[in-house]
Image (cartoon, rainbow, N blue to C red; front, side, top):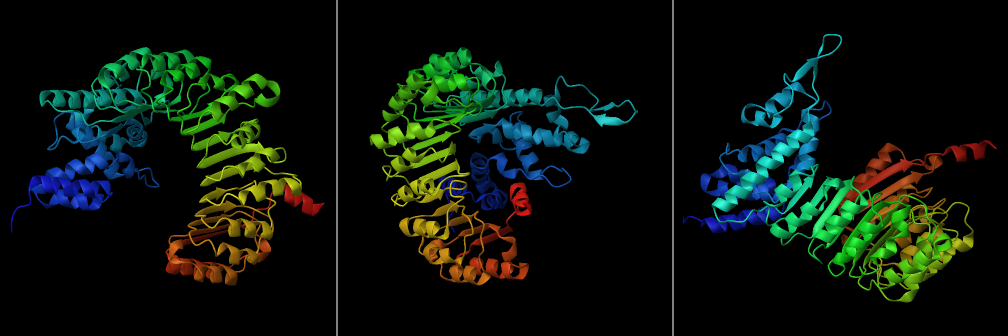
Length: 545
């Protein structure tokens, strides 16, 4: 039998890695030396240490998680058979920080992890590893995780950079993330010529110096995200310092510090910026959103407010400017607005305009009673495939419910519909109308009041449904549920059926629940979850009255 060429073995291992078949890759690594090199390379290239996070109930660290990180780090010291750190494409220091938090809790785990050549990463930290308490007992000293992270990042980035330079090769690392200090980040960045993205725990690491390092060494960089910290001016300095129209994706998980300067600086990337996600905007940030008016190449936009600002009533000029900006975003396909008081008013204007056609829309935390114009305008977005509406529906009139229901029935391309809370007052007839009108639905999350077996014939016509969550006060019978399950089609394969709020007087015993679970597993390989309705304090007091 002929020997399989090394390049063919590498291609085989590449395909196993892309498919996530890491068990087979590991077996290949153990098979023989010829195959091991390709298998190990692909195992580390495609398998993130995040896949190994498994912490037992007593806090013991997953052996695989710790050993994968240890092998990556030790390879940067030249202490391993294979140079594992040369294979990875993503350096996720946030994942390593999670490991350190677990390791630091147990004396034995900490000693094992930082044994021998790994001890250098405890540089500058007090020894011994324990200290005496006032009562004379020994207790573990707190591990200075930020120091360890910095030393590890320095070791890995310097090693991969020097190795690439010595071999006239290119560093594979394309992404870095985690708690990285403002001084180290530009240095590490200058070593990673293929760097495309970074996700930073601290936004104060963004600076003009970092922008300069990216400009000089990372021609493909286009994706930035951060969680906390920083200030409006430093963000502006960073975005203005980058090459114009180089950033495609930007996300701030906590955008409280983003204001007029940062928003205005994003116009430096007006032709390239396609994804923008700002979570937790404060009042200043909301009032200056119109500064983004040049950024009209967006195809995905998510804005979440941290403060209530009624733009329509209190800032009418800003309101009109935001409407004009969004109306000009002709490529916009995905839009999320959360906690924006004026969201329904803005959306009613831009949906009626007909200037763009959304595929996915999410609107949360708005008042159902006063959003009639917005709901009517939804009917003009017939391109919608995914719609999430989470509104306050307390004490709404039936006319307001109809203004939600009827436009939904015209969105015949919907595959995903999530109207929890918005549909709290839906009836059997309303749910039947939804099901009969939207034949392409694959996911449906809905609530309602006193929903019973009448809905199943209509739900049964949704032959592509893979997820059904019913949070309505329900009165389903086990026979009706079983009958529905046996009517499912092969196209319903993998269906997850969730009855989340069954009325107490219609409880289903555990034996019958077991029968239903076995039936859905046998019919379509699906799952069934069942919970009784939890009576709220308001309902309890009402019954007492």
